[in-house]
Image (cartoon, rainbow, N blue to C red):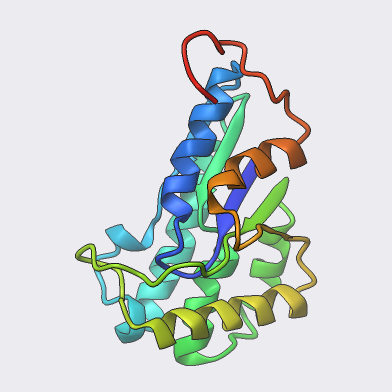
Length: 185
């Protein structure tokens, strides 16, 4: 099983990834995390990104997903190739050479969950804090989801604290953690 949490920057994907991974582990499901690749990119990102930077991010994302898939459990991805591609498209336009690859790679995810914009981004040393850019990236991603006909479950913006429960329920995983006596779930 490979799950991707997608969305624009600053909406809580990383926090949700760790929360989801913890819930899966408590259900005795082996979990591999693919953390956000853009933070490791040695080239400019956000509004200053380049084709080289976005190509590096896309290829590294795929390589990490392939490596993580070697386990028998679940891969949880903080982003997917699709939302990484949205940043490339935003800056440089669609790339006909990349479109088929991105479309095909989206089929490798068991489920994709879109985290909505529900708060302004806060500065963390990497993240762009311009709310107009955040909202534009969200619209760009929605456009790619529609154009590529990707099956995405949109999480409700009015209940961010229930997102992990929604994902577990959607995946038809047991709601009760096997190690419930040790943790609150």
